[in-house]
Amino acid sequence: MEMFERTYIEEARHRVGERITLAGWVSRTRDLKKIRFIVLRDRTGEIQVVVKPDTPEMFNLSLGREDVLSVTGKAVESDVAKAGVEFLPDGIEVINRSQQPLPVDILENKKSDLDTRLNWRFLDFRSPTTNAIFRVQNALVTAFRDYLSGNGYMEFQPPCIIGSASEGGADLFAIPYFEKMAYLAQSPQLYKQMCAMSFEKVFTITPIWRAEKFNTPTHLNEIRQMDIEQTFADDETVMDVLEKTLVHMLEEAKEKTADQLELLGRELTIPKTPFRRVTYTNAIEMLQGAGEPILWGDDFTKTQEALLTELVGDEAFFLKDWPGEQKTFYAMPYDKEDERDARYLEETYGSTEIGDRLVRAFDCLYGGIEISSGTMRIHLPELLKERIRYKGLNPDNFEYYVGAFRYGAPPHAGWSIGLERITMTVTGQSNIRECCMFPRDRDRLVP
Ligand code: AMO
Image 1 (cartoon, rainbow, N blue to C red):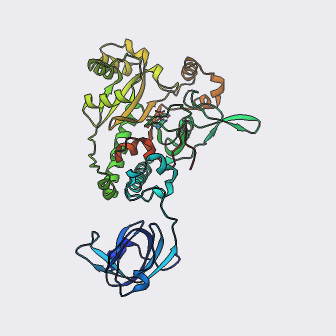
Image 2: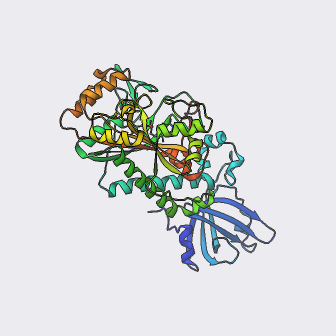
Image 3: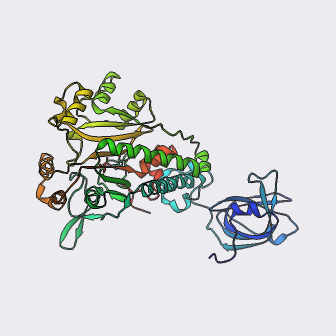
């Protein structure tokens, strides 16, 4: 229940001629000699309130931007107003005043620099551009959840405080935890695998933390990951799920936030499935052919990812079959003694030899940046311990996790999409901080 009977601006269009009360913020005012325009805003849009001098208490009422008002009167059709209607008030009540002047320009948000806008984020949310970015992000999250729930995946809640590393040990935030040390989760990885051992198809949307010291336009120290995990699956099974989920998210964003995307100047094209599968080895050759100083075994820089996108020529594609040294301990290595693996390696690389160095891992590049990565996992305890050791970690610290695969563990696979990264591509932002409500980076912990 609202505090008083309130009509949203969007609805006012359908209630022309009725006496209604609108409530919201003063976006801007224009005071002419014989007429006053107040643009009122609520969560559904804006409407122009028109005041004539014959009501001096409203005509002369002092108003500032972002003052909170309720306005009672009638919506009338208008040929000139953008919304097709304007509002003729018979009463205006000032509910609360905004301090003046505003510390950031919220009408034209690019006028204030990003740092200032982030300092005043609660106000910045009111600027059309920032507001549009988070409405699009919301549509992406909702579509992700709906698609997976609708396809038999169960949502689960992983812990955020953990006792040992999940992504290989580096870049952990340590926190005192009573008499011990604990860490902030770098990924729901180990927990989603353990859940999949019983629930089979699971997903989660969860914050994670990475103590990476660099401050780049594509990295944050706290991000939201959207993950899945499923049984009786290999890398190709979940790549198929990823492309379908992604297409659904994009279609939904396109439909549900068409106005916001238009305001952001984005024309979303929906990538066609199946996305192209480019092997890591092939990608290295393409980059070398374009004169890039890169060697087999190296990771790609962000510039190389963008160049690769140009060379491949697709908006979205997979990079698969990574060198083991580039991926985490839980990625399933190829087994050239296995008949299916041997056939695949022979067909793709003309020899099975390279299989010793490759794992069944993939990245998904969309709009020139890595938005997601995943792998087929190791479900064989002895092999898993060997890979943990190979990565220089102590298997004793992972016993609780390795143990999960001793009691009937099917082959399984999964992936993770970075929410802020995908929002960057969809909304066309070049700095990830634009796509996180309250970003945490090397320098920023407030607000
Ligand atoms: P990975 O470490 O590749 O894989 O992360 C998955 C996705 O999360 C996003 N991401 C980030 N976004 C912004 N800033 C960061 N510092 C950052 N780090 C990661 C990216 C990336 O593609 N457990 C595995 C996934 C899996 O195999 O299921 C993992 O975390 O979009």
